[in-house]
Length: 116
Image (cartoon, rainbow, N blue to C red; front, top):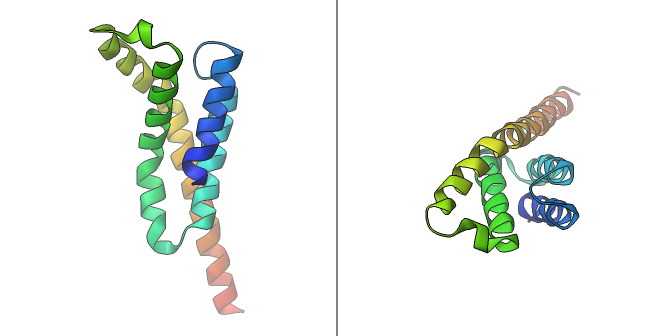
């Protein structure tokens, strides 16, 4: 839930404050994936890491299309989709990195508890 809800909130904030995704979306997407990794089980870690880019792209596409659907008619949808992927790539990478960082911290903490 956190993995989708936080990026969605950030995307809506950015869309209401001006066209396109901005800092609120970036921060919320990274925090959402980090929180999802913190809340998930070991078995769920893979899903959080693998889903991070898809969630970022999906939220971007849904909010951008909903906010300005007339702009993305016909062949312009393909152009817009390519733009969403290219512009969203840094956020996708940051979200994956945040999830991986949280996972590494959890693994280290678990090992320290086992040795104590």
